[in-house]
Image (cartoon, rainbow, N blue to C red; front, top):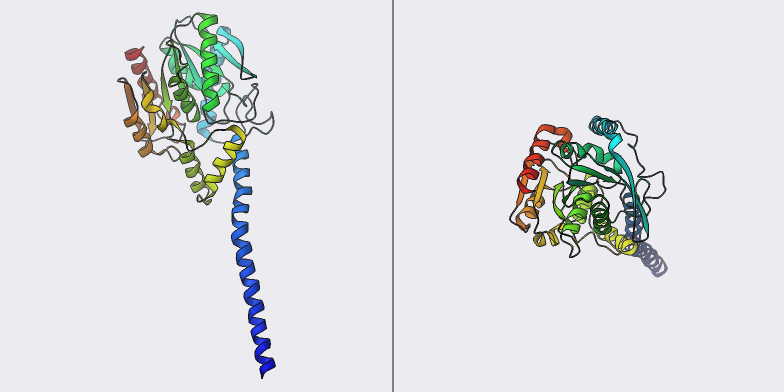
Length: 325
């Protein structure tokens, strides 16, 4: 009886030890698995990988809106190709490439695209500015198209590139009035440029479509959409970003927009799933400067406002630039 009882105790102790060990192993492996997963997510979304990624031209897709945007943009390019000058600068040791369209005007807009998009994407957004008397600069952001670089830095280093580009246009083409038009991450870069102590007077203001409060919030919404865990994973993605670029997703436009003292137009969809409307309203409320506007679109996916309501989009821009510049 004693032997049997001891044997049972030993068995239960062994089972308890195994279960406890597995529990400890599971607890220990959870952050490790999240660390591995977060690195994959970060590199997949914000590192170029190869020159075949984020290249010029439309990525293969069957989205009717994207196809229509590229078709309209390429038609604009074809109609104005005789006005095009290929341009190149170096900044922070990177070769950066773009196209300048001299349409005979004394003002210029620089189109700042979002993640994965190069200068051909910018043609589509050039159209409303060309209609109201602006020359156009479209560029391959760092790590996109023909430009050097490995990482999209969610607007931080891109803002420095924007200031280098505007200086180039000012110095080489005699343009003394330049505005920035940003889409998603491009709008963050535009804001960082305009709130920089180095921003010159000839950079007059900006238009922002789908600007986020900070990229961490946007990444969180992406994870939720993909049914991925937000807890810990989002923080670890931020750690990888700090490791590779020195910047944090937790810092964003919401932290600097109060310093803005130049005209701002925000274009935002009430259906935006990645830059939530409530946070966009907070951005607008906090924005500095006397000349600021926010225009809401009832419908439209993130970065898809113009294709959803072209007439309203173009008229809003026309009214804003006519009134402020």
